[in-house]
Amino acid sequence: MKNWRDNIRKVVPYTPGEQPKKEGMIKLNTNENPYPPSPSVRKRLEEMSVDTLRLYPDPTAGVLVRALADHYGVQDDQVFVGVGSDDVLAMAFMTFFNSDRPIFFPDITYSFYPVWADVFRIGYETKALDKDFRIRPEDYYGENGGVIFPNPNAPTSILEPLDLIRDILEHNRDVVVIVDEAYIDFGGVSALELVNEYDNLLVVRTYSKSRSMAGLRVGFAIGHPDLIKALNDVKYSFNSYTMDAFSLALGAETLKDTGYFEECMEKIIRTRAWTAKELTRLGFVFPEPMANFIFASHPDIPAEELFARLREQDIYVRYFPLPRIDNYLRITIGTDEQMKTLIRFLEKYINGRK
Image (cartoon, rainbow, N blue to C red; front, side, top):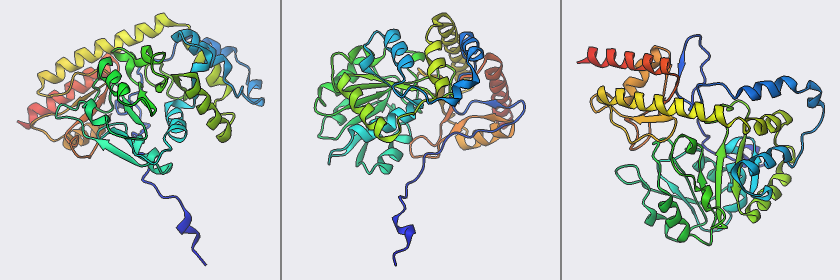
């Protein structure tokens, strides 16, 4: 008899950032927002009845879909929502990447892409970023089964211009191109303005970063109605009730408080600029940061060493022991006080090492 273990699907799983639970720690390793959600979210949560949990949520996610459509100036049938952008992206992989040709994405990118490709048995080719960690659009001109890339990129924090995205779209009219904009609210022009021009463009966003709602799990995609219908068809074949009632209600509520949202973005961008200046003073080098993190390297001190010393101080950053980026740390932007503590330790450690 054949061993049942031979029929298990085996993949190398995605490795999430460490989630320590220590009093007084400084957690700068998972790109969460250091500020709480909008006060209107708290108010709406207090108004919601626990009896809501007795009922199935709306499978169409109507309240959230309508709120997102109104907020971004598109039609309801151009919006798809899911349990965080990871869920949305997984649905997109299943839905759109089904040809016998490989999909393309960068070699340095969000590390969930190759995991999904393996899980869903999708062939893929990685395209090497140039020496400055930038996308070369001509690498995406060849025959393929689809294209996906983050913008700004993770983990480099580099933003590619809209002209580059248009270039890639122009050379890939017969496949779906997905632009993963998890960090776009922290700077740059969104590809959303291209969705009515290109029927094969899907733009994916998340509430986990700029909306301070990583614990609620809300993601969405905007694209041509035909793309959204295809995604919904797969969703309803997989799990009709993907989003809970609280996520739907609170996800819609936070979009109303634009003033609070803009205030938080301004604070993070301001703190990012201060942190970048201080890291430069300490000898670090990094691409221009356009997300809520900085991808930094010190020419004289290995990143792995710095990662370990910071961890001993209960300051958590992200280290990737991977080719080309194994001497970089990804440092999330926290509060002003958290970043000052980080800089004070780095300054003391670097000076003491000389």
